Length: 91
Image (tube, rainbow, N blue to C red; front, top):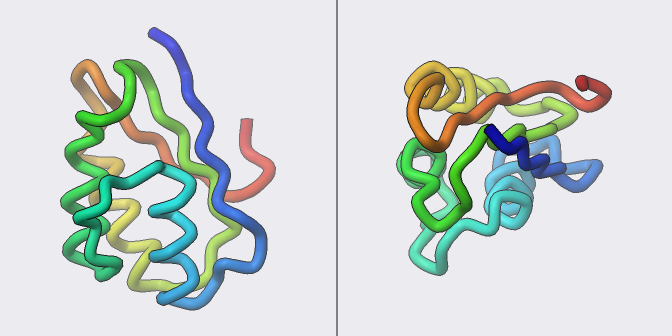
């Protein structure tokens, strides 16, 4: 299984900055609404990305965003497209 890294730009720690930067890093479709529900929906779809494990690297920040990332990671732990979230510096 191929691994694809998606690195969120540094400094995207507030909710609004993180929502925008995660969308950029993951190349979310144009319909992404930059809110927590839309974040979860996109992270649990990933159909526009190639199959494999998608590793989202974020420095952390907003607790609400972090909770959605954790929920999405749990939902996407199996299948053709998987999601793993880790803090900056992870392997």
